[in-house]
Length: 138
Length: 228
Image 1 (cartoon, rainbow over the protein chains, first blue to last red):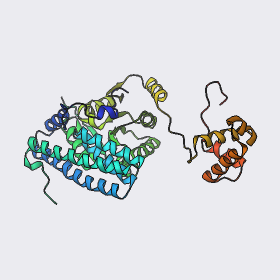
Image 2: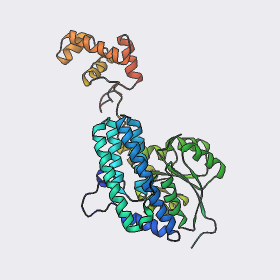
Image 3: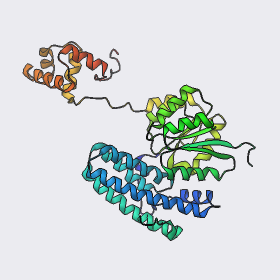
Image 4: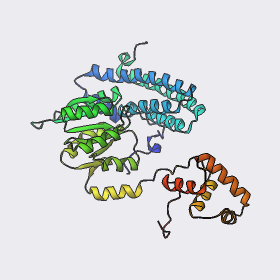
């Protein structure tokens, strides 16, 4: 099963590795070349949804809800993988593990780490796609 | 060069961003047509029955009927739709189960951009797709997976390892004295272990305990050379 990524493989292992997997971003951009607005909207929707997921993750930690924590982490992990945001996906995988172990104290810290990562993702996407990728404040 | 009839694809994933991402990846290829999208397993089943797509891209972790349950239902219906499982991280037991339930391919979500088109084509040509490539020998692959799949952790019902050892000896017909002698502890300690075990799993005597242990897979697996 060598081509299936393990947790270790998912984890960024060098400072050179970017937040955004270029090969996935480029393929998606190429696939949507006729609809650049739609492409930007896709990542904007991701950022918007990720913000909501963070709120739900914090709440699940506060209320010691392991099942919700795992489910919300899985949800964010899924879109992060498809759009090439592997470090965020790795944080989500860690959160799932912490949720399964009922380690809410560590999960709070991991959610904070995920939030920081997403801030960097936001900046990176804005650099690549312009201000239109930033979701409007609710 | 596009085929005259595009491959009709149904996407089933609870995340709208994932569905949009996948849809756009597929629509870039004129050989593919996305004929529907489902946000959970139940909706996927309904749409498969209604639309009869060539290919179902199925997420395993969805609310309102997980993907594996939907796959099980589809298998029993002998549909012509070929299922490709999409997953974030999959363990070997899951791969094995998905293939046994009739899935024709497994693609990791972060490999979707790179592999999905090739996987769909391979599956439509009657091949299986695993580990990022077509599978040449499914029987051998299934055997390898079965050999490498880790068994699910044994349920212990909150019993400690020593209590589990006591349960094993009880099912072998050992008396308290035998058990005490076997572990080098007093019979009083054995009785305390038994009281704790009875309380934890809710049985009232040794016979009920032995039956519970046999029926709930509480005994350790047989070692090679030991009777099954």
